[in-house]
Image 1 (cartoon, one colour):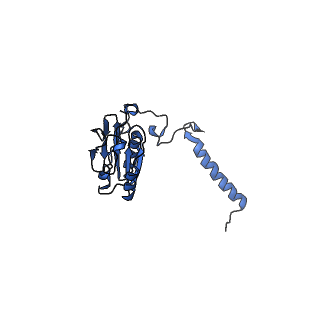
Image 2 (tube, one colour):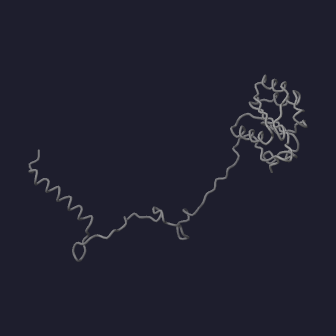
Image 3 (cartoon, helix red, strand yellow):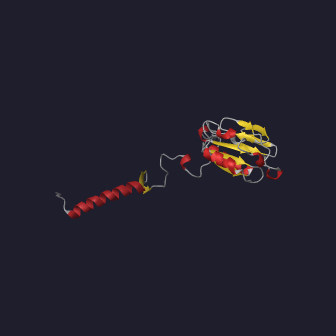
Length: 197
């Protein structure tokens, strides 16, 4: 319970507010009270200002630039960097002619064209351990039809098959490999018109 009448109490609180405001806007000088100039806070820093530019006299820590080099992750599969009518560049290895890119190795593939892709030439892909999830076939400059017996054999072994022209097969292989899928590729070099070097 307050013993101070309401009017006096209001006056006391109002006087306190005026005193606080006066302290903020005025400061004491030799000539009495005068309006305080606008001054920045005591903890200012040039680095908190948006317009500050670093100069040679600034601390070296703020001038250093760091670079993160994107490197191939350990355990990621092979990547096809380029192709030409002569062959492929796979992880810096030049491979001439048709090739089989398998999870553990890069091998020459004994086919001349898509017509040579037979059940016998596909034995390499379904005998591997660990079992391949997806086999990407690059049939040269354009997508060609593969013998249905070959596709049926791979399906019976649980291997999904993607048949594409070689440029798209290279891109599909790289994408699947970057997702850490167990993927293999059988690639026939494309003709000159689709060369990428």
